[in-house]
Length: 281
Length: 193
Image (cartoon, rainbow over all chains, first blue to last red; front, side, top):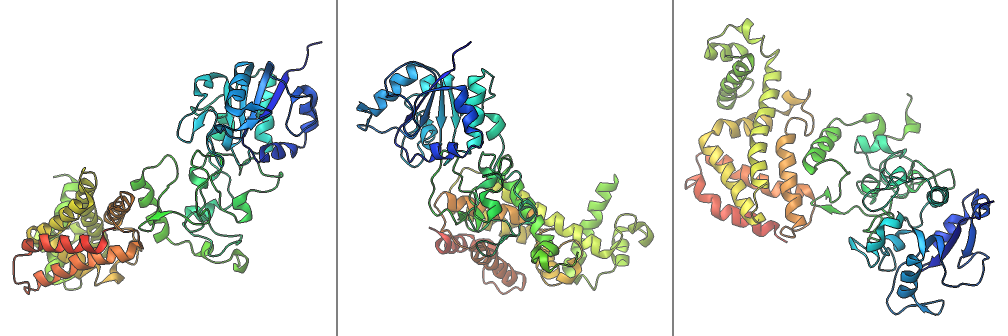
């Protein structure tokens, strides 16, 4: 019988939100049964030692002069990367720096300290990443299946989409009708409430959270937590330049977008301008 | 002459008549006479006077929009762009006063003609889109103050419109092109960051 793949899960500067997200994966036991978890900061595992692994999972950011398990964090990460066959970066901190500073693969929009090892790395950004995204990556890696990656090493199957795709408020976006107040079930959150869905790479509205919901569905704007620009300030406000959204949907020129939205606004959709429950048809 | 060329000819003729005599005082028969065409033949090109007015609006908006786009794409400061836009507007007023008259005396004064198919920005979007891009980029480059779009748009276009109106009424003391410099300066001072 083949031995199980050895998986070492190490934490940089982290809030452990990525681990906690993973605990919510309904089939977590099945995954844990398929691997030999040689170290995890929170789950039961053996005493930590620097050793070879088939898969190194890193959660959290880098930091100079930071101690982890009695080692210098950055040196520890460096050693573990060298000793592993594949590296899975979990969360925006590990990929880009996120909340805590400097990522493993990128330092915000620049190449990071360990970019030179990018060929064995896979990025799963998110704050936190969806448990299914983490599980997908672990399973694909331990089963030696090829994952199609984009140029930031994100699996295309998850991150080629935007969180806008699949949003139940899309019809309101089409007609440029915004929700007037927080928590309204109807209306788009893009124009006033800060939603970053149309330019954020993620599958939040395709693979739902807790299998039922997503931020925009529940009335909270997408915070763009999977992006290198995360976190931004004023997450409930749309950044505008002279009233025009500073960030527009991916794949379209500003000129084309402004033309289209002007037309959509001019052809006012009366039905969607009112509460649907007050409609007779 | 192709059908499209003929249409353009009719539009130019109509533009002159609308600008000079107003929309309601101009009939399809007047336009046909000026073109040397029969009234019946005119309807092969435009089903109604309203549709002609609408196409003219789209045409003039695109004409200004195309010129503004060129300015937007220039690698110059926002202050210089303001001057270019003012120059363009005053130059057109002098050279093709019927364009500006049409916009001010027909479009802005007779909105009811444009209720069917020109609601909101529909027929002037080529022009408004370029103005939006101009403002957005000015703020993005931190050269203009970030504020409500219409506060800035009204200040810019209302000011130019006012000057052009005075010019067309024969009230301005000097040639309108002599106002390019001070008007541009005022607009920049009012909108700068």
